[in-house]
View 1: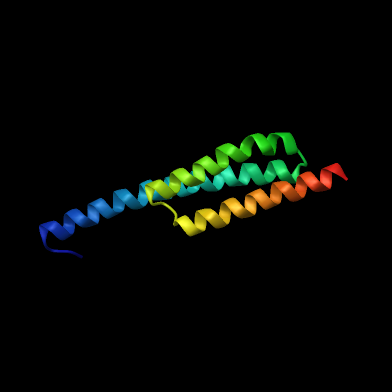
View 2: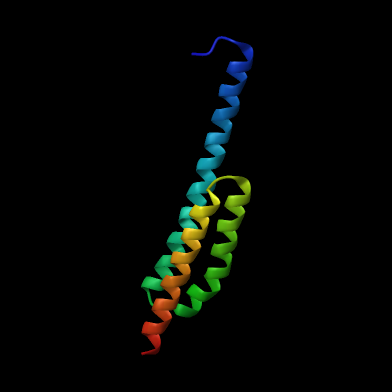
Length: 92
């Protein structure tokens, strides 16, 4: 347990940030989960519509420092490949 006032304040601040970051991370996971669910249900039109908002959310989380920019790039690449693969399978 911290004893100095500045250390106690930093602990309070860290806890606030942890809770806020957890909320952002959870929301991002939900957005990605909904997008993947659209792909699994073969609803390509809904997935294409959700893709832009999902990628936007990922970029926003990077700007907030919630996730690393390389992690965001990996997410975006995988999601884009997934929709392209599903769309190709749907046209066959």
